[in-house]
Length: 526
Image (cartoon, rainbow, N blue to C red; front, side, top):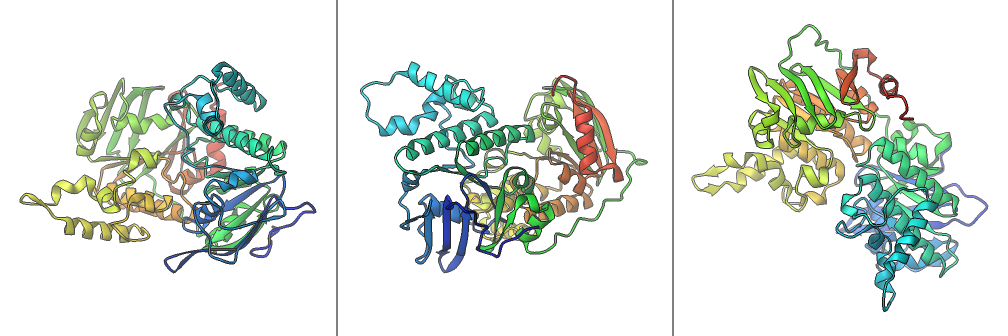
C-alpha cells in the first residue's frame, strides 16, 4: 500500500487540475472541515471517501459555491489561484461541472430539453430549431456509445439512463466552459450510483472512462469501496473533517481503505452457525408468481435470515414488493405462523396488519418522508396508540422516538430535526427503528445498506440480527454479495424468475455467490 501523509497528495510532473490547501468550514462553532488539503491530477479519476459526517459534502458544497469556507484556505485550478468564496454557479467559469445524487433533471421534459436546458436558458434566441437540437443530441450520445432517445420523456427513462444523461449534460456544460478558458474540465460525481444495480454501474463507469480519455479529470464521491477500487486512480479519505490520507488505488487493498475510513481495523461479524435445516418453518411462501417470477417457493424459520440475489432481471428483487402487496401478484400463498394469506389480494395495509414490514431500497422516495421530522417518521405506524381521549400525546411520541434513536444509535438524537438533515446511514437507522418497533413476524429488506457508509453498515447489520432474536424471520434481497455473506443463514440464487441454487452456512461466501449467479446466467446474455 502506498499512502501519502495526510493533506499531501501524490504529485505528478504536470500542474494539478485542482488543488485545495487548508480549507476549513465551521457551523455554529463546530468544525465540519479542518484544514483539508488535496490535489486532483490532470486526467485522473480521484475518489473522495469517508463516513457520513466526515466532511465530504461540505467540501463539495464549497466548490459549488453553496457554502462559504472559513478564512485562510486556498484554491487553485490548473495552477491559477481562485478567490474564495466562490459565488453560486461561478464554478462553471473554471470548467467545473457537478452531477449530484438527485441528478437535477426535470422529469416531465424531454431528453433533449434536459440536455441543453442551461444553454437554451442562458442564450437569447428568436427561435429554436428542435430538429437540429435533436440531431445534436443524437450525435452526442453516439460519441459516447449511448442508446438514449432524444425525444423520450426523462421521467420514463430507466434509472441508469437518467444518470448517464446527467453526466453527458455535465460534460457538455464543462466543454462549453472550456471553450471560454484554458480549462480541460473537472467533473464532480457526487454519489451517482447508490440506487443503481451493478450492471448499470458498469455502464456508468464506461462513460466516466470515456470522459477521462477526452482530457477531463473526475472527482468520484462514494461510500462504496469496491466501486472506488474499480474506477479511481487515487482516492482521498476524510475522517472527522480532516484528511486522513490519500491512497494510490492500484497499490491499496479494500482493508486499507476501510481502516483509513473508520480509523481502526473493522471487526468482522461472527459467523452465524445456526442450522435451521431440521426445523419446521413458521413462514412459507408457495407458488409466488408475478412480474418475471414464476412459482417461487420459500420456507423461512423464526430467527433466520435468508438472502435473495441474482443477476439483473433474474427477479430476486421483485419478491419483496409482491409479498407486501406493493406490486400485483398473479398467484401465491403466504403462511405466517398458523394464518394463510392470498398474495394476489395483499395490500400494504393488510401486510402490516399481518405483522409484515418492508424496508425498500429507494430510501428517499419510498421509505420515508424527508421533509417530516424524525419523530413524525418513526411514530407514523404507532400514532393510533398515542391518543389520550381526543388529543395526541406528543410528549409520549417524542420520548418514544428518543428511546428508539438511542437504541439504534441515531446521531444526532434530535427528534425535531427533519429526516433530510441526517446522513444516509442515520436515515436508514431511523427507518429500521420505525418498522422494527412493530415486532414483526416477517421483515422484508431490499438493499438495506445501499448508500450507507462502512461504519453504519455494521450497525444496520447488528439491528437486523437483533430483530431475529425476537423471533422474526428476515428476507433480504440484495446485489451486495459481501453483505449477504455477512448476515445470511441461507442465500437463494435466482435466474429467469426461479430459484436455481441455494447456499447454506459455510457455502455462503462472496465468491461462491458470484459464481452461482453467473453459472445460472442463460446462454447468449453475455
